[in-house]
Image (tube, rainbow over all chains, first blue to last red):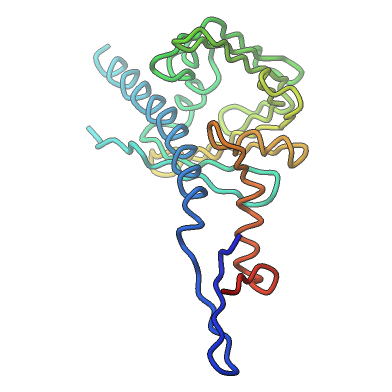
Length: 57
Length: 167
């Protein structure tokens, strides 16, 4: 997949990372994290609503 | 009024089979527990905004089962069910987890709550029976990319010898 590049320089081998190859992982993680965040944000908003109702009574 | 903590959930993948989500709430543990386990509350937050919860039954006792269904705006039914293995209000529940769209993805979900100074921390863990099950959760929409593949990529980073591409 070529996450790592290798370049020969004389007897040395220089390795470098290809960060662009990790983009699909970042994108997927972001999507999953967002879905959970949205759900738990709804939980938080609902908790606040309940607490405010409790204070008013 | 405390500021909200929107967007602060943290998702981690401690090993091949688990997904762990943590999140803090400015509310007492007993209230958070109720909101996470009582049907009249769960039906308020379980589904995304554009979806409607059409079924929400929760029999909160060891051996009791739950069944939650929501319908997306294009009419797709999403059905979740399971059986409670542990019920310890207000700190912990453990339940089997099955999404009917992925009948082979069996998981055990544990929900732990811990309150410190009025802040309740939720730790939700989904532990899949096998890697194929978790792969369902980790597929990107519309592509064949799975988290397993990504994991292999990450491993290859740690061990570059196997994947060096020469040019």
